[in-house]
Length: 413
Image (cartoon, rainbow, N blue to C red):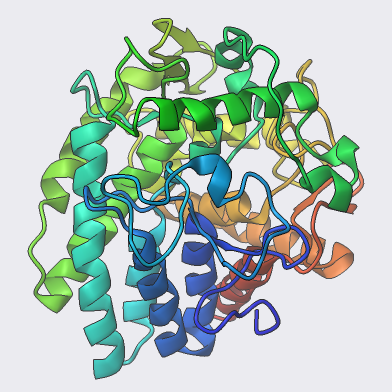
């Protein structure tokens, strides 16, 4: 954590991710909360540097001294764009809104520190604007569901969930620089096919002048069950923080809409929640751990029992090292490739938290223990092979360290 500290914000991994990422910083703040609550609050404050005039908090705030990442600021075409921040360079898309949950963790562990409270009061005001932005711009049908315009907004970049909507995109002959597969074995990274479409969508956002999306304009527009669930949890936590600090918020009203919206994504056949492709108006019924994320939101009734059964089934509970992002029996499973099978510590952490909320204390404790054992065995890696436990992706990955700190703290009571 301290090695990845860049003077108030934490880079995910210096060799591969040298900037400030949105949900990475939120997860890191949860770890910092156990070490230094003021430093944790500062993490969230610095994330707000990138907030756009309309309230959007982008998925990357760029470090001008780090050039070894693509797409960089030039590719995003956001510098000088209407509404973009003036003092920092950012991307034009967002990420799952974990920051409010992190803010609650920090405040609960601050011991009434007035410096932390003052910082989080500013953070809560910014988060209120961001959550309102989701409601105003990312729910084009008014259904209480969060829509994404790029797979990167999900945080689960190359998940099989996106195969069908990406297959409908023809990016044409597209040129770009890519550096990730020169740092990490390309067999562990998204393919060239995926990246062609990722860069195409980056350029589409700029071509559309970063306008609010609609099914008529967006080549990729998906109602995301996992991000909706994370947003639902975020509204609960923002309401708690705002009440504690005297900040005005509509978080409880937005949460009620999101709870109702999630019911529309329940997939009876799989016993989980499924995304919906709005650009082509059909459900995306793929098997992925994202479908269990409503557990983290503390919603899902009357479907909690089905979610718990799915979690404990051979699909997700049968791997030697849980939880695989894709069931090993699924045709799309790839044990080493990014979000197509490997174990991610942030997913396990959200499931531990969600299982506890659902009353499955033994399952939560078992998953926490196995997750700690995985990190102890294979190190602070970005993700892990669910069959062998081998560490994959970047070394010295910050949220793996941060969330391990929290899991250890939970074990110790």
